[in-house]
Image (tube, rainbow, N blue to C red; front, side):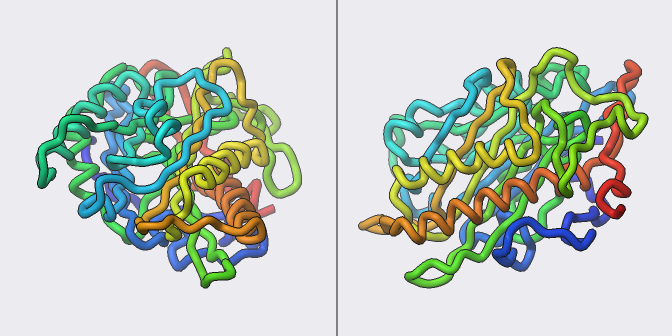
Length: 341
């Protein structure tokens, strides 16, 4: 089935009586708690053809009026195809929505994103830096380039600020992480900054190798009598997107993005040779003079991001559903009993 696929409500970590960190989550405990950010997802799922892929779009509303929003980028391991990365690093600005999809669909998605933005431009555009992150979902998905321009536009046009689906959706439809079926996860934190309360939201496209660490122990599929999902040689990629509703300076956002990727180590990410591990942090607010956070406030944001990413990965695993491909491969969902025990 192609398109926006409705799903039942997934179990979340907090419903098991556990939480990560001491900060309170936002109302939805997702990146859409950050004012001024919308998320849209197109899911491609066809059990007969063995297609499991899609696209997730993160759309900062400020781009409707401003040329760019402040942003920072960090790479831990560069075995990936993060379109637009060099200009993000050089200028610490984001000019377009952010797309997350599969490896060989990234370039088609970037072209579709350029067309979508140009159609909405109110002044002549001679240069544009489309931003697209990707993960390798080829262990499950039989088609290498299943995402079309129409799928990208559906995600962008359908982006909303309300509750968002997690697990086998959007760019995470074919993702596997830490030996289990994974996908999209998200979380948020209310951050008590000295200048007033702020919200930090994270969205993780989890598709990395390693062994899951959760609830104070290591959980591997083999110990549960399950076959490990994913490539036998470490290949994957993981993308973390962080959003803040503070007009933060770009260089500080780089540091925030770094914490987003490093947080993956809390849940067992291996950061292997064959994985592209990327973090992008953006502000949904634009100001003439960006706010420079004090060291104390920056530490609070770091903590919110570290905790949020850890929880988002676990929620991605809990929301994911087992996938069995026509070719005989099975990506098992994390049994919920692991966290209910």
